[in-house]
Image 1 (cartoon, rainbow, N blue to C red):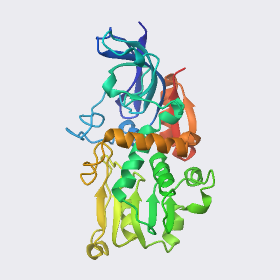
Image 2: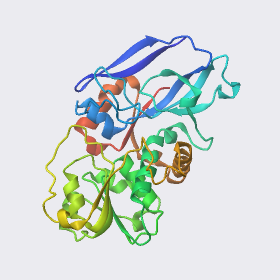
Image 3: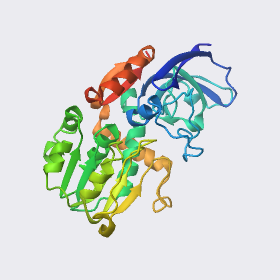
Image 4: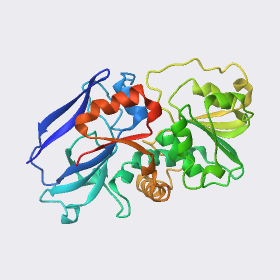
Length: 332
């Protein structure tokens, strides 16, 4: 039986790779060997920097009761290499996705695994959480024909969201990010004509202040002020960022007071009550898989590290985020 190496956040800006023995499988369990896992930079940097809140219930099994030492992560792609006696033999050698921390091996029950379509490679599949989040954001925003839409933040979730929005018949789509690398990332494969991309300084000098729908995905709570200022009367602001313990003064005493702007909290662990009668998790996952096939987000991978070099990966994201889009761990 192989041993498992798992990444742990042990304190602020401190990580360890811990090795442990893998327990014998129960009859209804499988053993998965990890192929790759993606770092969710926005969320994981809160954990790395010690900026995460200690929530008793975050409505999911990933972000509740967070305390150091902490194995964290939720974008793990692997191959089933062993199955318990009661598991259908079709699971053996199947490529699967799981919301698991960064680890070389893990034991799971099959109901927590998502089979990967044969048409997708493992690195593409590691984007499933980001794309599912983007699907959820777009569904919560509910773009309408001819609307003017603004996306603040072009990290991976912002890029996935903007890519989905290019498929809508909008009047305009404007994206904003402080880093040039991320601003230019949406311009591949003929999308340049559909998107106007701005830096924050360009945005302040622009006249894009009549947006019907704004997505705040920058991870910066102060960006809510920009979102409010740039959204028109009776517009919607979908807030997809998790700010953790970061705080900022939000100006709700100016134009916002009379604007009838709707602030919409959007988080992927649940489905909007307006949709839950028709939509469930499997349907949303299927939509996300199809979107991954169309958008091919693996083009946004800027860095690949082994798990043993994890400290370098997080230092890079912490100190030089302008050089990164998606950072992944490869385990082969």
